[in-house]
Length: 127
Image (cartoon, rainbow, N blue to C red; front, side, top):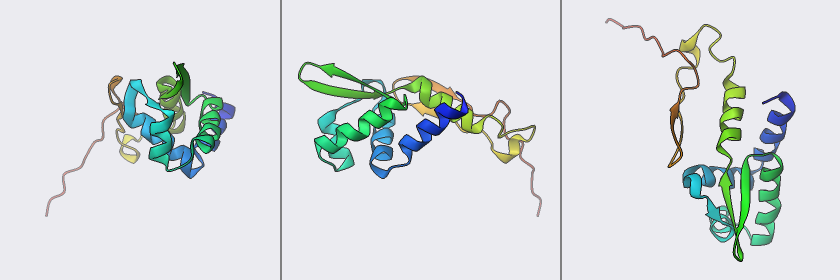
């Protein structure tokens, strides 16, 4: 992911409704949610939901597909992981104790991927 793609993704998430929709899709896993389910979760009308899902789609964060008469949106996991990796790319910089290991788990999709390659080294504190 480059800077332009990251800015586009972060701008799309910089809205309370879109953030709720995105997080709901993270929880939903690979199956995603129907437009009605997303509108209910976000507490907004279907017409407003369309505007927000289009912004998340333009950023590449979600994918929407037609299922008969209904629309179903799902998380674009590779793009989400790419954004997280982009944000945490330099977090360790030889000091994994600064950021630790941040597992990224998406239900029903994949196993955990640590943000940083090295585990946290803890010091024992004696009293």
